[in-house]
Amino acid sequence: MTRRYKIKHIKLVTTKRDLKRFIAFPYHFYRHHAAWIPPLKIEQKKIFNPEKNSLLQHCDYQLFLLYEKNEIIGRIAAYINGAANKYRQEKIGFFGHYECIPDPGSAAMLLETAEKWLKEKGMQVMRGQWNLVSQDMGFIYEGFDLPPMVLSSYNPPYYNDHMVQYGMKKTRDLNVYNADLGKAYKLPPRFFSFTDKIARRYGVKIRTINMKRLVEDARIIVRLTNESLKDNWGYYPVDESEAENIAADLKMIIHPEMVFIAEVEGKPVGYLLSVPDVNDILKHMKGSLFPLGIFKLLRGIKKINRYRIWAMGILPEYQKRGASMLMFRRINDFAAPRGSYLEANWILEDNDLMNNALIKLEFDLVKKYRIYEKEIT
Image 1 (cartoon, helix red, strand yellow):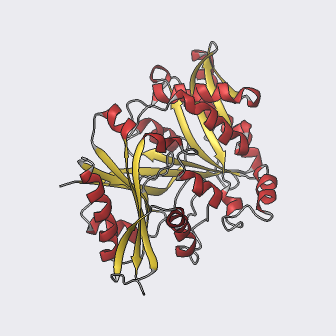
Image 2 (cartoon, one colour):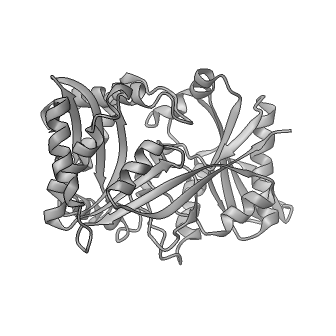
């Protein structure tokens, strides 16, 4: 007997087979999009595995697939981050991992399904895109010509139309800046005399991350993150138990010369974490480590000359003592002679300290991501 479907219908992801289809959909959907870079499938599987992704351990979540007859035409995840809501005393639900054909009706089906699920869980606001990955959020709103760097997502422009048509409104923009040290970019001469002066005045010293004490330094980064970013929009505390996972992830890809910890009299007061843009390798691997992808990845990481400035945190009492400028100088000392390309990603539009610092360093604003939200009624 042939099973009969509605022309379009939503299916909950409940089986391993469903999950496999959910993960596989973007590889088919974006196969003709030159700007999309296929992530490693093995890493995508980890995102939806509570044993591999600690975020899921305090999230209630559900994945959905949108079918037209028996063909997948969209997907969405809806989830509640209990730890974040408890910390901020909010009832915010999230959607993420959104993909959809260019059809407003299909988009509305996906977003309505996520909203209904969140409403049934008692949420008052739906916010997204906000994926189940640290600092992977927002839809590209400006700057579609630049391919996404490591740990950044891609989307076609019409996704923003889908959000507006559904009644969602902007809540925050995230700025992306770049500097191509292999071309005309040079730090202003006054920058060097200025950083010499503040280093002497405040006693700030910059060291690189210690690969032999990587877990200990990862704990320092977690503590500094929690203390320095507690007033930032969207923040909630990172558990220090995450340090081992962070260290394991960093060990595989980082160039230690591009990860810094600022100290005053031996006390850690800030950090800056840059990661090499492995997307430069992944774009040739089609999402697979096999049969030879692992060798391409391992050989290629050391040769990468593109970096994403992924995270920075400075204790509030040291934020006006030049620690950020000293760490940027160390970046320049290593990257400029190599002609590196730098991208500072995910800068909140109202983070005046970071935006102003990058503007003073004559970085260019090249891309914006937008996060939307909607009251659940």
